[in-house]
Image (cartoon, rainbow, N blue to C red):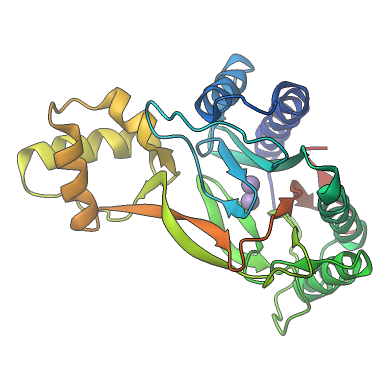
Length: 300
Ligand code: MN
Ligand code: MN
């Protein structure tokens, strides 16, 4: 069960995430630098009194998730692209996770529409005791009625304090997963769509410039220990951007030391997730709090 103060923080995070998502919808244009979008989103979150729960993700076309700009990124939003902006906000560790697709190619508008409709359908049937497999079936059916495919190996997820992917997953296809939505818990529901020509699956690609702390115990060598401690103090169990790590690094040879922390598995790097047949992906996402007979969408 959630206390009143916890609900308040969840709602505040949700409101900020929702405001920033709406702002993003009018802000992002073809030809813009992805780095500018990431930094603007993160600043908008802070300006409203929240903190980024993870780096702003800007995923273009066949990239489904986990790309954020590295420092000095020169990449731009290509013309006629399908762009996902995924926004995470936390207030004292209480997280809101929401995403929007910006479709600059009219041919793929149905991808965005299907993802949004699937999300809406899943939210309508969500309440305590509902099997996550029922949500997956609803998502799949909705998307298939558009003549499109869901991405079957990307899922929604439970959100716990300072934990983006805690516990239960919410599938985007009918599955044998026996888990049920529980009262007093928080979940992100996030359908992903691709075309009939797509595989309907993602695979791992190159680095997305997003990392998180993996080990509890600090390393022994001095520079590694100093950097590790400062990263842990700042980001705890939440994902962070390479951009953020460079900025707060107290060590001079940052990239060498960071590389050694990756090698010793003190830090984990997320790869980008790419559609197997390089087909474009759209996404919609909201965060919900589950009550006995209904859910509250914090990011509406
Ligand atoms: Mn998200
Ligand atoms: Mn999510």
